[in-house]
Amino acid sequence: MSASSYAAAGQQIAVPPQRCPICRRALTGWGGYWRWVRAPPGEWPIWIRRGRCSACRRTHALLPDLLLAQRLDAVEVIGRGLALKVAGGLGLRPIAEQLGVPHTTIRSWWRRFRARAPTLVAGCAALAVRLTGASVQLAPDRERAALEALGVAWDRTRARFGGRVGGLWPFWSRISGGQALGTNTSPPWAGLAGAGWMGPSP
Ligand SMILES: [Zn+2]
Image (cartoon, rainbow, N blue to C red; front, side):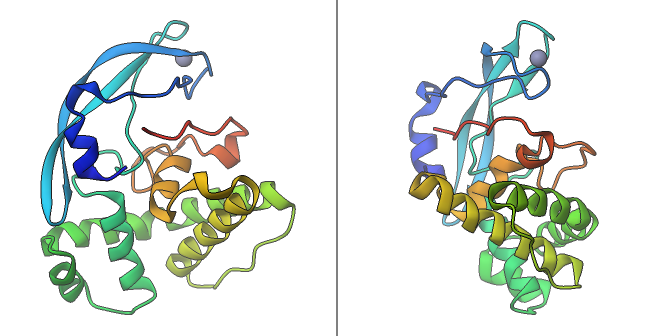
């Protein structure tokens, strides 16, 4: 779902049943909150539902996979920016101009991505290996390896589950529980935790 169509649904957005990422019990509805998403050419307010676990009593934001936690920009835009930097070798300033986002914003993505790269490599490679049992060949450069491992995990997931897996960047958001660029040290990686897949967002 695009940012604009998600926004158009307002508070009527439907979320499929989700499980607690900590104890795996079913979550029940627990209100929600408004936040913004920037996805050129626009910026929209969107409603994020919350779910509460009756067992551990924690509440969780049920982020759609078009977002990452605590990032204003749609994951599609963030991913494109990182790929331009890693694969295209472009500087951050021209990438910021191309994407229509502030230079400071893209710099913060890049810094976080660099710091996060080893975790991203480990999470995506583990997921890829889980899917087929085959090893994953990666570049020595860790930022490049992080995107390569993601690409392999996505390819293997599509081979197993077909078209419903969706695009690369929403997939990145989903398998990391929205924490691909987070500071959380133990993200709910689907591949590492052996947990079930987080359900696709509406
Ligand atoms: Zn729980």
